Image (cartoon, rainbow, N blue to C red; front, side, top):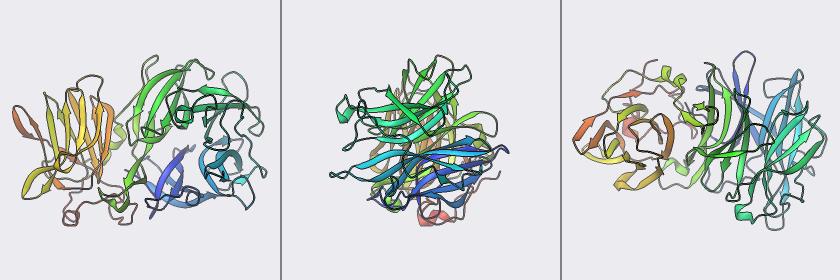
Amino acid sequence: MRYAPPGLCVNDFDLLRHADGAYTVLHLQGPWTAEFDHLRMETSYGRATSADLVHWEPQGTAFGNGLPGRFDQQAVWTMHAFPHGTGMAMLYTAVSGLTPDGWPLQSVGLAYSERTDGTGWRRHGAGPVAEADPRWYRTGERMGWRDPFVVRDDESDGWVMVVCASDASLPVEVGGCVAWATADDLEHWTVHPPLISPGDVDELECPVLERLDDGSWLLLGSVGATRGFEAWTAPRLRGPWTRRGPLGPTGAYAPRVVVAPDGSRVVLHTTPRRVGLADTGDSCRGMLAQPKTLVAPPGETPRLAWWPGLDPWLGELTGDPALHAVGDVDVSGRTEVVLRAEDPDDDSAALAVVCDGTDLRVDGPGGRVLARTVLPSPASALRILTIGEYVEVYADGVFALTALCYSGRPAPWTAATADGARQVPVRPIRLPDPYRDDASAVWSGPPATRAAAPVARR
């Protein structure tokens, strides 16, 4: 349902879909720690496999930083691997070291593999294949040249690569942009002026390009300041690009698009955690979240919806307390859905979802607001998912809000409105790895609830 390798956390990732329908994820990995040293800790890619995009099996490390003195000696960051010939190619972010003020020096490297399973990589040469062009992009201090993503050019037989960069013509605080380059052979790239430069974004990370069914293009970009991701659409790769606004709420980051086993197009993303798995812990890198259905009607704003591929992991409706569960609630006026109580003998809310017109929020102990958003119109129905500390809310079928809460004990869900309170039946979630107890496992609640938490039947 969510994934991180044993004892480690996940950051940016890439997804491979194989000819037999199986999946491989390559991901940045590092320990759970508040002071996450991205130069020393993100020096390798983890690898995991899945048959259904829900149950992931760790397969160890697949790639690491380069030899001393090379352009990727310090760290390797976000990658994009794709079929090439009878094997695969991978463009990846390389960090050679630091500027005098401590900023990472970034470039893009290339590796090939004769295999198709995400292993067996060999670097192409000892230098990068694409670097920031100072005519258009900031280099040195506060530079950006990372997170490459490659597709076939829609106007030639070559390739197009998009890269997270910093627009040199703008102040650094609003210079986040998507750079692009073209090549005939993956090894000799021509860098062009920014493809997208909004002028109000600090960082536009992890850009992803997806060709839609009508031949148009979708670009997803993660926004550093909001820690969510937005969407742009265009009839051609070269534009013009139309900004469509947020697609993933705060807490959902670094998306990837892939075809699911049922043939639908889905988005996976990362979700953060807190050090010590406690509300008082500092935010840190996290886990791979479960898929969402990508809905992208021609000419309309894309949205993310519930993916039916999760339904086999849900049990029968029950009124019993459940730490991992999905529930549906009709909204009538101000509605407060209590998911956890402070104590079995105290029904005050430790975790609640509140919808009041267009105001949607998640409250923690004492009514402290954990996450909040403004909906485009008042919601008539909510779907709420909780897995351990993770809370996810869909408003009228659209993925709208996420939050983290490590407080309280499971209680029967109740929905309170001006007309009174009613119980909300839920469907318990069966976890793919219910017996894991390492730092990467799903939080299992206060000690007294761990043995009693209901387990759904498939």
